[in-house]
Image (cartoon, rainbow, N blue to C red; front, side, top):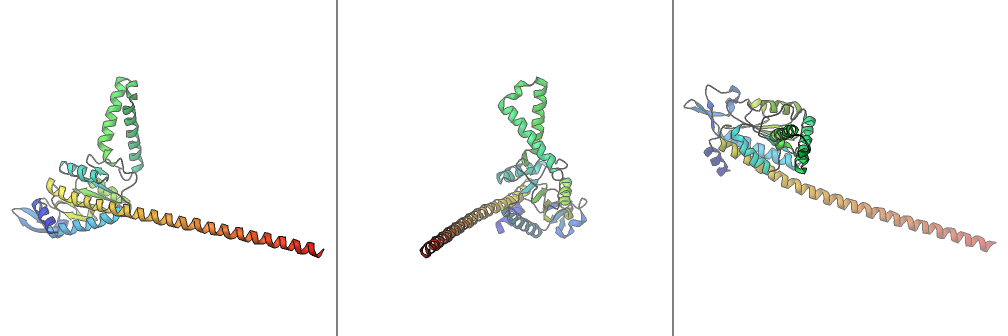
Length: 278
């Protein structure tokens, strides 16, 4: 814990925006003002980060995924490195309107991307005219740039992590409309009401973003480990239940065979008694 606090402080996560550029709703998370710059309460930052890690770990363990969103230049590298390494979907380019609320259309565009990639890999694109080949190449690059990070997202996420609430307001509104929990690294000029779990901190520093995303993705990895364990236990339990069910069926079949044998024996004995009486 102490090392994490030191790392957060060294990354400059406690430096907020200028006093003239702030959101009054962030007042509970501000410690003081120094040289005209708001200083964020590091206790609130650690509190929000730990709460977010606990929530993400449980969410991923239950089988849901987390979508990471950060289209500003300072956040792109961290999201690609940590979210990609944790095999979670992420958005580092422009947020396309309807990514969540119109998810079916987004999946159709991803199918189109796979189709274009098959055409290029097979060499069939050479069968088209130069103009059509150029158009297909541009289309493939555009879809790949905008949607490559979420191509493994086959269903809506269980939560989204956002860097800079002001820049990613459309993504937050879509998540709120669908009831998807939001976790936000939010500076003193942001609106904490857009976040279900706010992590107050400097969202302009590459180092502070790197530390926060790394810690959240560590919670994702831990949740994935628990998910695999739970899946293995469930499969083992189902196999045991299935085996007991088969054994039960076998016992029923054996009991049925004995019953039929007794019935046949009783029938034969009755026939012999009748023959003797005659």
